[in-house]
Each structure stands twice: as structure tokens, then as C-alpha cells.
Image (cartoon, rainbow, N blue to C red; front, side, top):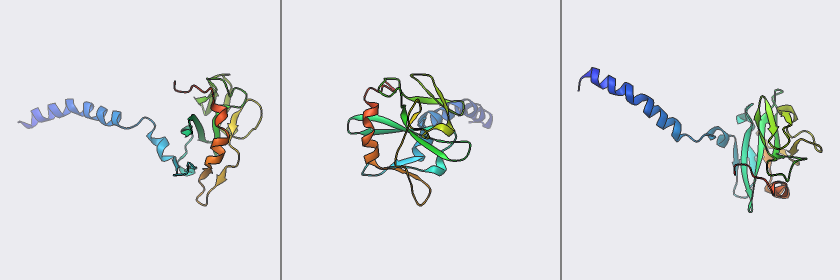
Length: 161
């Protein structure tokens, strides 16, 4: 095969090969590196890997699907909350999606900048995670018992269905 013909074939195959590589990488692979769950179900959020783009961490507590969201605010702090709205929890669409430097509730449409995630308790806010513990490395630990105590807030949740 001539060098010219080889280059012509390679030029046509390169975009297809690149697409195969991109398609093989999970869409949320950056999120997997931002957190881990141990054998007891305790969640560790690796703070140094959390970016300004919200990370949605899927959890399963017994039969209940739920999520925790983590995002780095402009002040550099990592904010965490359960991915349900305090006022709307119980509604099927009471979950947040990323929106212009923060998150917006899919049920009520209220916007919350990253700085407000996990801060307020009561009212229309992302549901704060209580008893968040910082590890020696600065990571964020959320015990399985805390996750289990909030599973009821996701009872009618329909994210992804």
C-alpha cells in the first residue's frame, strides 16, 4: 500500500476512531472520581475533585433511589445538599439541575447560586445534609445513617424516569 493511500484511509478513519473513544467514555466519568462509597455505605466526597459544575451522586438506600449534589462555590468552598427541594420534596420533579453557576428546582423553578447550596434549612432551598464531617484530608464524609434518615424525602421522586 502506498503512503498516499494509507494517509487517505487514515484521514477518513481518524474521526470514526475518535468518536468510538468518546462514546466509550461514560458521560459522567468526572463525577465518579469526585466521590466514593465504602462497604458500609458511607459516602466520601473528594473535595479537591469537585468543580464549579454540580456533581450529582446517585445513592440507593434500601429500595429508595436518591442523590446528593456537590458543587464548588465561588468562595472555593464545596457545598453539599440532598438533591431535593425542601418545600417541593415529595413532588416527583423536586430535584435540581445545573443552571448558570448554580442549580434550579425542576418543580418550582427557583434558582439557587452555588453559594446557597446546603446552607439554609427551612424554606425553598436544596435540602441541607446535616452532620457533614470533614476528614483529615479535607474530604467530606456523609455517614450511611444520615443518608438513610433522609430517604423518605425522595419517596415520590422521579428523576431520570
